[in-house]
Image (cartoon, rainbow, N blue to C red):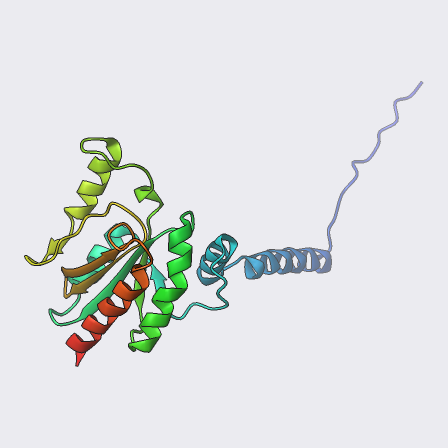
Length: 195
């Protein structure tokens, strides 16, 4: 019996088919990338999921501690900078989130830097891990001789002149619904300084 030789099967793809498949892949990837939420949408979603009920963000710029230090280092000595230490994980932060917006709008403040301060949630006792972490953060800032501050609680709002901390309001100090009044006073103080 003779052995039959079979010819090898050749697979050929036509140029048109390759171009169509490449175009489909590009369209699928582009669609996926265009539908990913941008930083602004992520910010709004994070705060709205916590109950802040905001439709847009024209005021806040979310930064880390290191980014904040770089921003402050670039400020002129007479420039006022507002920093809101808050986290959507904290009910008071969510409540005061919109109050900060209202006061900022009233006093023509166009930007408030927001530091997500989930790291500050907990009980700070002298020498514990949270105390050490917060002390390291506090040591990064220059503080006016008349200003007192401690990052013990959130929310917390700080006012800087240039890169020097000059005023603060925090929820712990301003308990019993005085926070809103203290916040108004803080923005008014900073607004007068701008004049």
